[in-house]
Length: 475
Ligand code: BGP
Image (cartoon, rainbow, N blue to C red; front, top):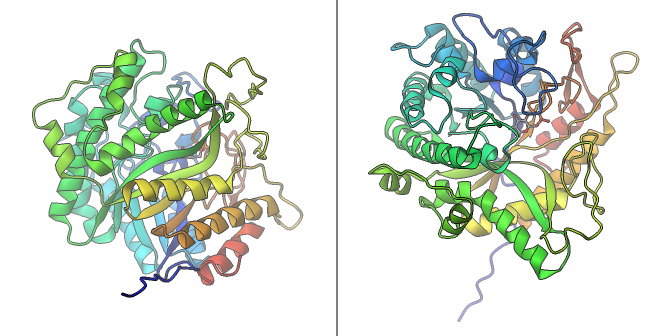
């Protein structure tokens, strides 16, 4: 008889991936340049919070931070902060401007090939989100949202093109950003391209999610067949859920809510609709149309790894305690306030322990490698004399979250990378503001797009550089 004692990992594994993540539409600008046409993100006016307008004076994505033209110097700053991975998305409307062309726009492909090649030259691996909250607007105007099955083929044409042309410079592909976010959060239309005020919203959104599951599985299949190195991951929005009280009714309500979120990764990772979802569908009169072969496709091509965004946790209560004293944040509509946690200026709870729990739960559930593809603090920064930005609050936020990652690794979680959100300030997806900044690199632009566009290194830049340089030892 012998004892089986495995060594407890105390440190970040060698080769851990550290870097930053952005989305094309939130940083590139150049919204009608080199053949690109309008994407759905280009009709989001500032301050939208789910609203879309075609008559606004100012659309933040049209110019954003002009990354389309500045990517070389911006990426160089990231590489100088020791980044070894960069995550971005490909703006679909740069490759297929309307979505319906037979042949892709070569200028769009060249742009991404050059950018990703340059990342490698700088020593950064490339993680690409195939679809990050944008779709050629023409497709949506003509065919509606993703509940129309036609989108699977439009998407697959896009996938085949980018894989055929960019595989040599891409290391990891993610099929959809925060898949399912629209279904659990019907105020935003980003993921499914369905207007929030549509009739039968829930039915339409889950049908859209089904089409995205099929599309995601087909993308996994295609990438596995056509790349000898790339891995394909899921990307889900994760918010750790707590029951409001220890009343079992609250715990049950919280569990129900959790499963609504897990539904999306359950399908993408386990390759089938989980048994618990049918009751939810019945209660909400949701009927999903499956075509012949859908089940088999979903079952045959699960993702290789799981990535997730983590910003905050949330609190859920049952109807039973609904009457109990609860504080709902009416400014931010962020739901029940957790009295034990501080909040950001936008009402998001700051909860590093929640990240550790997220990592443990996801790993226990799936036993697949995990990657944190978004995390960070949106805050208003003040530029002091000499263009100095002392963002100690951001350092504090990131330090605590990196420590939480380390604690999860000690508990056996297989975590292989971390990309902070918006390493360079970009347009906020939820509010369209520039002033909601996540970056370690400051961009001198305000909410109306005024400013020099100059880049300044914040205090957090040097902090993060040291963290990466010491592989998480010096925090
Ligand atoms: C995620 C999105 C990102 C991003 C981030 C921060 O949900 O994937 O695109 O922007 O949230 O949100 P916000 O920009 O609203 O602060």
